[in-house]
Image 1 (cartoon, rainbow, N blue to C red):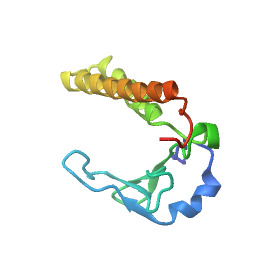
Image 2 (image 1 turned 90 degrees about the vertical axis):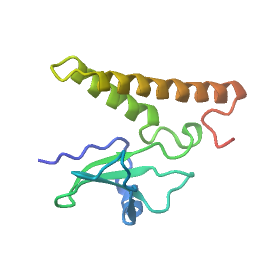
Image 3 (image 1 turned 180 degrees about the vertical axis):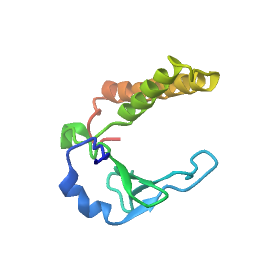
Image 4 (image 1 turned 120 degrees about the horizontal axis):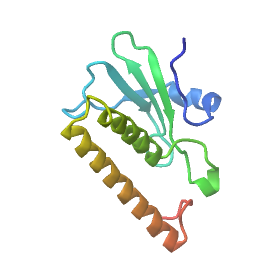
Length: 138
């Protein structure tokens, strides 16, 4: 059974970019006990867009995430947004909060993720007000 989930529809055109991937650096906040996260070595548009999560035990890719590549007005919707991924994590934690696994740490994490969404929304609104949302204009 294939467990790979894709967000975005650029599978074929991204195969070349996925050939040279580098691992996200390990820190105290993102351990690599069970999985490792990789992204393209030479990203376009100033940030990585293609991610692979690999099982540490055997190196098998268990998930791929393609982020929006380029401004939407110029490139169309072609991948996940930061907000999409944050909302996925919020939904998952809210599920735990509605179960016996409810805890203070989950509640705080949800609050901080919602705060991140607030700041990203604020950034978008400022860009809209300046008439540059969805473009390469800084």
